[in-house]
Length: 118
Image 1: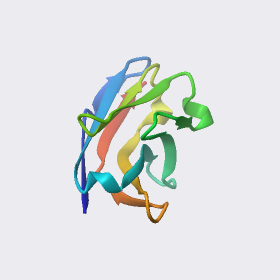
Image 2: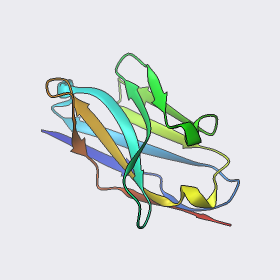
Image 3: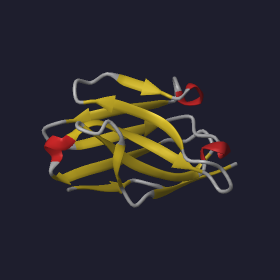
Image 4: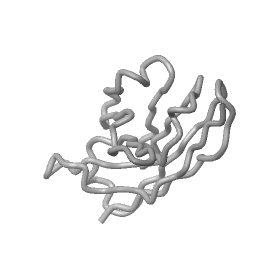
């Protein structure tokens, strides 16, 4: 089907920046929306940001102004630029893709850890 591989996580100090990347392969024609979710210990997975194939974006309120999602359709890659990171941004970040046919987030990456030290 569709394979998603994330990269770019790591350890950063509060106030710092990181950029996550997610490369899609396989039946990429099935992808409409790509996005990033995150899950912190003991919390539910939450949407961080999403972007359609046409470039429309959507952000969770707490990420607006700090995070920027972008997409390179030629490279089948989506990025998440994270600035002004806070300790509460510490989580496993997952790349996800929504299927054109089902309209659901059917495809997930393995996750990449982001740790923000205060």
